[in-house]
Length: 102
Image (cartoon, rainbow, N blue to C red):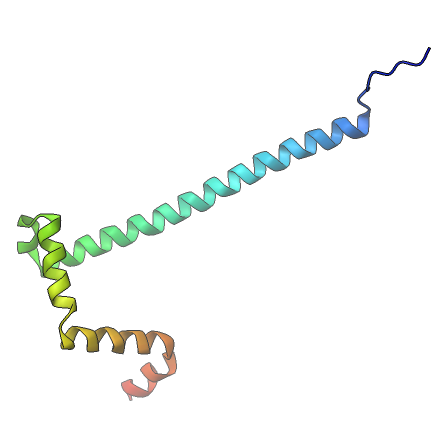
């Protein structure tokens, strides 16, 4: 009589083992990517906090909603918009920096 039960051979066992290892590697790589992203975000937050602390120490007494209101008004000014567009232009045209420095 032929045994109809599916038996696992070495090839299937190896493939399952490799699949599990690949899943583990994927999980580890995702974790590393998230950690790197989180480090970059935290570094940016600390830098921005340092800017506020250095140049706008009075802002520590404001609530978040009040700061949002201040920033909204400041960013709406023509002077601020021009500075932002100049910075964006310099970021997209790095050769202009060298020419301006001369």
